[in-house]
Length: 309
Image (cartoon, rainbow, N blue to C red; front, top):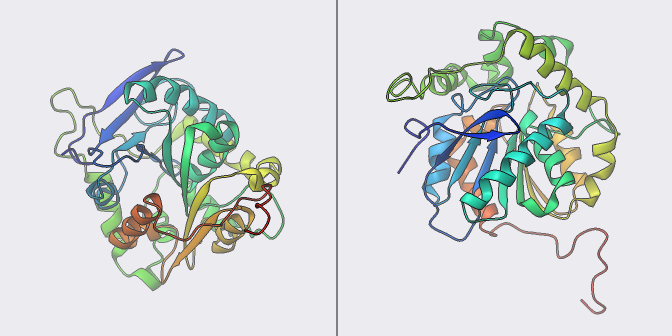
């Protein structure tokens, strides 16, 4: 079975851009593939193999994806989260028929959670279930802003120790942040540059980073997606660390409260990187959610339950 370390890099021509993706694992149940949308500046090469490989061990196929103009994908970086989601939808319209399915489950981490929310707002029929991790809604009531120092660290042209500290505060996680960083940046070292595989694409920098920052910040300033959250009629799992410095934990809780059918799970002594810190338990919870083993609301907002129910 393919893993994060061994999966072949594939591409689709979508509107003149070559979009890079990977199919990892083999589906052994009736669930649709799980589309993985990674954090700001990341690539399909920087997923933590402990998360990817534990998810495939639950018997499902994963799709990892490089946003247009980032990582191994060509084209122009999208100027907004909405544009990111529209590019992704065009990709899915081409890919899903080849996989003999019409839907995906979606796991969006950090900025990937922004794109996932916009995707389900624009194309609800394409999404079955949502996992939103270390992420929050767009502009709206009761949200907290991250410290300016944290924002500047995340968009620093040269990621390093401060970036690791933002994901894994060492005062609660010790040296686990460095271990995560090493796993995530070296998982493809055994195949990179061999047998047609590209060299490792690490974190976005340069002009692409400037455009990506603009897209990220425009979402933070847009009240429209927040106002539409209660229209999302999907089962959702929202997860957060109890001390997220990048997307404040409060914002993940607000997100869950605005969604009609959401479970909210908070991980102890953890921050933005909670899904990597607790990879085995996190993937167990995700698998149970996707398999329908977590509590769900008896009906969605906007739907009147039958009399006597």
